Length: 409
Ligand code: ARG
Image 1 (cartoon, rainbow, N blue to C red):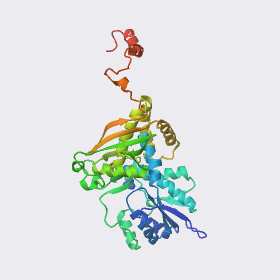
Image 2: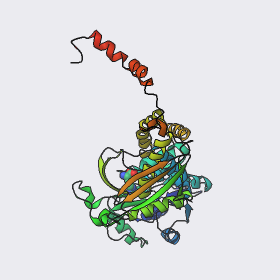
Image 3: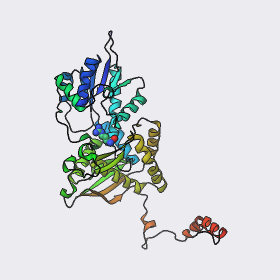
Image 4: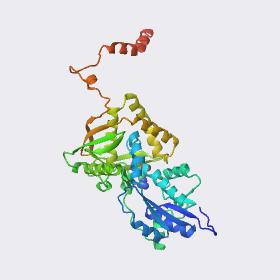
């Protein structure tokens, strides 16, 4: 833990949410560790007004709260590269939480440097993945700044004892009753856990879903839309060009209305146990499907298969907190190289939780009508198959002769 220093007070920059843990932390750092506390909150589109937190942080004892709007950076530099790589953790989770953490930490470290701080701090639980994302980012970007994680060390072992601390010191903190779920939210999606969801057999109650309409109550006929990709990036919806944040937010609202993007999964945490998670990720669900289709019409078979092999590894690097890892960067460089000709328009229908592709076109289409058609416009040379298949079948033919009577069984 931080030692008090009589000559100059040491400084810590804390990733602050204004919730119970970080509220107690501000006061505890200041009064038991004799530290100056600077708070930081990032706006990743969690749909919550962060400005009122300024007064609260100061009242609790922080010297100030710094707020940064990082939405544009989040979508462009974290979500979109992940989208282009096709990374879904365990084949399903688009990693909204996992993608946000390295970005928050990067800014936290940046502030720590600018403020001449000695420490950074977070309030992530020891049972989760977020602590790893935070600490591996710290390790890669600022090896000389120490991380303080008081919740691992202090005497308060339960929520109740933290609430007691808040009351004892008259701190302002809205948490009174335990909320039924633990929720993390940003523009790319929402993560919901705890409470009744901890029983994997229990169907998620209606109130667990925060943003999407129940598919049964979504409009019967759905909606049709067209997404245009340039260089593997979504740039327009229904012919209207949009900046990344606006485009993602548009798809989030539209998808939510049609019950798109609900995920109920049992997932393998990096800390060694499984947890039951709900995700609501309408924009990511639509864009992952559309982007895969844009690649289907523009890329060759080998490149598509190569990307499919790398995607699970890329997802695990992100999930495990290794955004700033040379392997993640190397895969990203490869993926970027593949995206140059991913120019396509994808038509899709959203209907009662389904995301259906109904058409695709591209100025660089690798689909050839003349080769594929069975009508009179067919230009495919069927005679070419003869030698092609003769040679490719040759090993089997040779083996069969050599093993006559014994193989195939
Ligand atoms: N299991 C997800 C992940 O590791 C979601 C974590 C949610 N975090 C939270 N603070 N509620 O990415």
